[in-house]
Image (tube, rainbow, N blue to C red; front, top):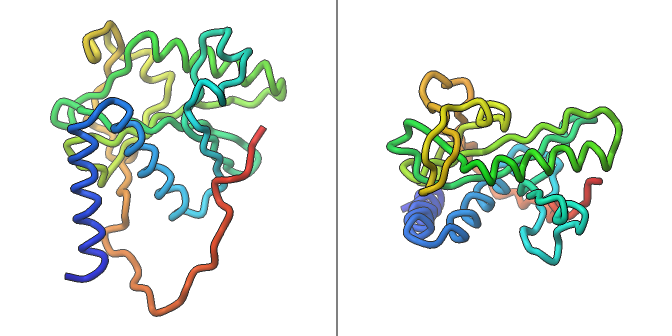
Length: 196
C-alpha cells in the first residue's frame, strides 16, 4: 500500500468516526478538511477558534456567530464556514433559522466594524457525510436564506438542493495528485496570521 492510499484510508476512517460522533466532532472534521484544502491551494487564510473566550464581546452581545475562516482573495476577504453533515444522500443541505440569523448578524457586524463597503460574503463549504469528506460544495449564505422552508436537525430552517450545481463541487484532493520526488517543503506560518 503506498503512502497516499494509506492516508486516504485513514481520512475515510476519520470521517466515519466524526460522522458517528457529536456535532462538535463533525465540525472539527469539516474545519480540518477545509484547512487542508486552503493550504493545498496556497490561500492566505485565518482560522478563528470557535470558543466563547475568543468571540468578540460586541458580536456576542448582538447574537452573532463567526464563520470558521477568513480567506483573502486579492484585496477581498471572504468568510467560510465548514460543515460536515448529513445531506439526505447528497440531495439537500440545510441550516436552522437560528444559525442563519447568527451568520447574518456576523455579516452586519463585520461591515460595521470595517466600514469599507466590502461585500463580506459568507460561504458554506458543505462536506456531505455520505462522501466521507472527499468532495465539498460551496453555498452562499444568501442562497440558504432564500431556500425552501423545512426542518433541519429538528428545528425550523431553510434547505437548498444539491442538484444542478456541478460547477460548485470541488474535490478535496485532486484525482491525480502530483507525485513527490524527494523534495521537502519548508515549514510555513500559513493560517496563523490575523485578518482584521
